[in-house]
Length: 464
Image 1 (cartoon, rainbow, N blue to C red):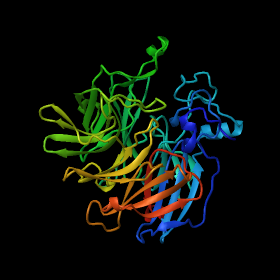
Image 2 (image 1 turned 90 degrees about the horizontal axis):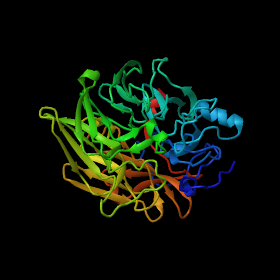
Image 3 (image 1 turned 120 degrees about the vertical axis):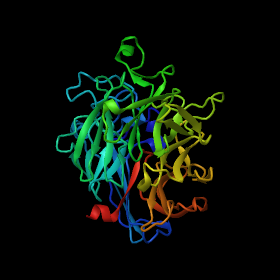
Image 4 (image 1 turned 180 degrees about the vertical axis):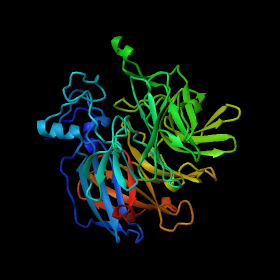
């Protein structure tokens, strides 16, 4: 069923597609590396029916796009994440749930909201999971991208599950959290073993429900961000928004030992901001160092982004240093370029890294990404690969080369859409030479709408 475009996130390459396909060998411009073998999977919002009321980009049903690369060849497939809500609406032939721009439907017989599983994906303990931070993960079969069903760790998962769990590839553990907008405890923190067993869930005290999209880990600590993007039902009664950025509240960062509990959390205060995504965290002497993209306010639920000449750039890369001995906080802007989707070589997540990778936010009223940036923190410099006029990318994944001996020995992969030709492709870039451009462009036989987060799963991982 065609959806009438009613706002920018239902138009152009934000508009959904409805055909699920599986291809034969794709056309490749350039040459795929012989030792690049696995599948690139990206999640995103793709509503199957016309929305009820105002539509926000975050509302759509999850759709996975996968490009499998093996023996210098590539194939593509895309599949809806068939959640319970997706199946109900498929059977009804229409949308049942309203979106984020509307109050929760407390009178909806199917429940007040729908788990769309549309935000991110993670591979852990032999299972690919599609994630949405308001509910349980969904297990996905590789390489077909077929939905297996909700994944609740043998019913031990009793909270929501973040779209950004953190993996320690040394211990094999996966850390996660789930936040509750309205009822205490407003935050739950969990650790999953390398074998995929949910070891425990710890309640963490917050003064009010907040939107907590991301967090970070270091080698021995977990860092939560209690930022002033708050939920308050009393505001709704006054005709004000349920979710609001309160600029007069400080940002709070909670640091606790990885296997600690609520009593062990140390809270540090800083200036009001919102951090949609973290790059990394690590320990250096008495300090915990955190980096991520910093917003002056949230702006997450606005249909377009704004730029204030007086306040300067929004979403620059920032660093916070929390001194565990003195309790002091130091925050520094590392670059004055607006960025998103920050990533490191995830084999080193939680440790100090030399390099970071991110997408550059285009100077455009709609949130688009027009370039790839590689940061060299040792030299304090960066290199930029622009995608070209009318070409926009997304989440950038670093894939280490097998048997690599240096941190940046590998490739950067991202989906790019050309608005002029209305075509999409997966580009492969040598991470040690980003400015030379793609070494391979895998042409996708249908348009891939702009989406959210991606991951790479090595062939050897999902074959076993």
